[in-house]
Amino acid sequence: MRKTKEILRLHWQLGVGVRQIGRTLSISHATVIDTLRRAQAAGLSWPLPEDLDEAELEARLYPGNKQYTGGRGEPDWRQVHEELRDSKVTLRLLWTEYKREHPDGYQYSAFCKRYRQWRGKLDPVLRQTYRPGEKLFLDYAGDKVPVVDPRTGETRRAQIFVAVLGFSNYAYAKGPVVPGA
Image (cartoon, rainbow, N blue to C red):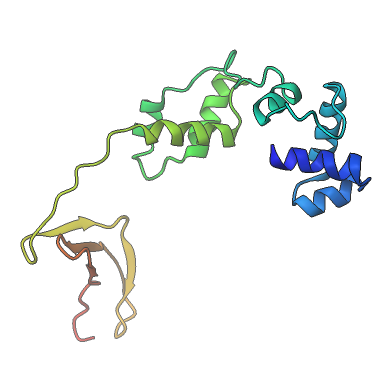
């Protein structure tokens, strides 16, 4: 609301142009135009009434500004979360499937935002502490990678494993051992 008041002051009191106001306040000129139109429609002028607080100003400029959720199919966020565990599944892919079923549904950015909000409500992961040297965690790092023997030029596919010491969280990775290299 502070920027809204500043838009109104700059335009009505000082006569500053729409684009200059946008540059001054680091907002688009379309936002300035929209704000001025809303103020006119609400019957406001400069100076604003002294008894007009920010909440009432917002209510007058943006009447009925409630978050719209009607008519949109709400995704099953638990299923979305489960499907994202697969390394080949992305949020964009799941959104594309969602839009096929719900053409009037959320756009991609709103879909992602709502998923992040849902995910933020999940219980935190159990944290465990370890003494130095107590545990070593080993995991497969993904698909096989090509490894070329420098002597023969032969290419073999190798699996990569990563080890992490539980206490230090320092990762250690070692590539395949090539004989004679």
